[in-house]
Image 1 (cartoon, one colour):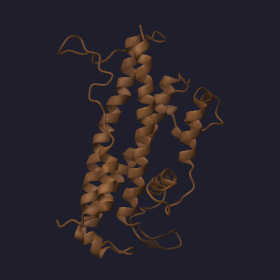
Image 2 (cartoon, helix red, strand yellow; image 1 turned 120 degrees about the vertical axis):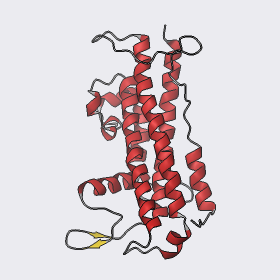
Image 3 (cartoon, helix red, strand yellow; image 1 turned 90 degrees about the horizontal axis):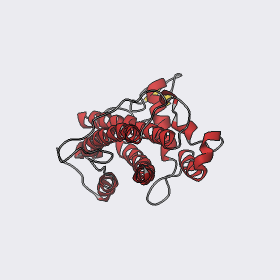
Image 4 (cartoon, one colour; image 1 turned 120 degrees about the horizontal axis):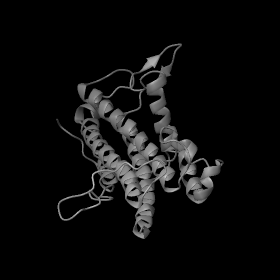
Length: 245
């Protein structure tokens, strides 16, 4: 498959490659080749070890998500910047198998990137001991500065909320503004209405496709931002763990 490599592709790859996870973070070693796999405590009987294992559970999920997101991005970039898609793309019809595969891997990455935001909410819930069930954690609610439980991390909540609610602006250099709102709306349309990668003009919906390269920039930049927010809270957790008895 002939590919069109350019500065755009290098920019996207650099964003992706800038994110990494330490394989052994939150791993509690027992000697040179053994570690604590897991622990289940009695109700209201948390211990320092059980607290660390909670974080490890989320961290292992983050590593899994990240590896699959990177795989999807890599595939999506290859198909998006194939000569066929770059030369023959049409907003009204599917032009090639490469285009179908580009959208397929983009949508895979999109859903998992949204999951990273959910994991960010879960980490804040644990670290700041927010008393809501883990199956009722919604990141937009966690980072809404108007909610009482965000008082513990007000400045961070304002920063994250400001990003989540940015107004759209793609005329700026570097990272576009409003990426998360775009990505979230795109995901919601996929779930609740009709596929945004399929052109449609009807009383039900008027939809003209976005080029895969446009989607990749928006999703990869959102992935980069949430990954940096995750890195910040993970560093804070590390500092607290170092203080545990």
